[in-house]
Length: 118
Length: 108
Image (cartoon, rainbow over all chains, first blue to last red; front, side):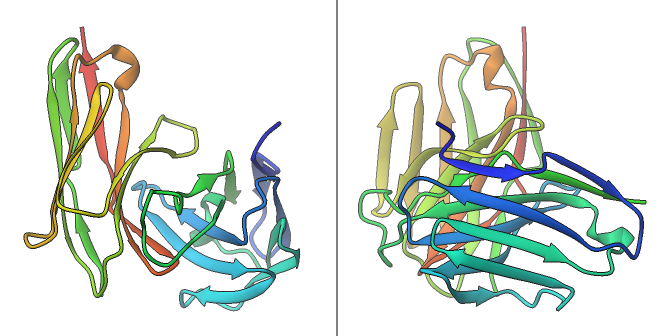
């Protein structure tokens, strides 16, 4: 069974459209994340949810709206897509303890969604 | 702000040893993680350090010096399958801050 699964794998769309990416984890983790990886392979955190509550929002445009119906799911909806939104979006989950003790806080990533805005 | 630096790209020969460095300046620190990412795939966890010193896991070792804001990942007996990007990440209270990654090319 896949630990963190996200769909779709590829998403090609026109500028101005609205699209969603879904993510689910079966690890029982309390915290889920969305990361954006640009063409230079830089992974940047966008959002983090802990038990369905938003705890991190890293100055992401409000065209991006995450939704967590329960702690196993974190979806990402993007309105009015722009060319600059083209990137790979990774969902991830972890079980943070605040201070790393045994590396149990490590992130488990989904397989990524390659978004191409034309 | 958070600043994490790694070399962009390195090349090494199969069977050799390679060291990938990472320096960081962050407003907080609760651990340093290394991830491996093959092209077109998700990052996967390799190792972590929270205390100073060397952690060894098979062919991979990672070192940390908190006073110097410095870590390295050591890969021994390189194999072709080790060709990938290696990402250094600082963990700070529920946040992981990633460097831009080092692309390692292993040649025969």
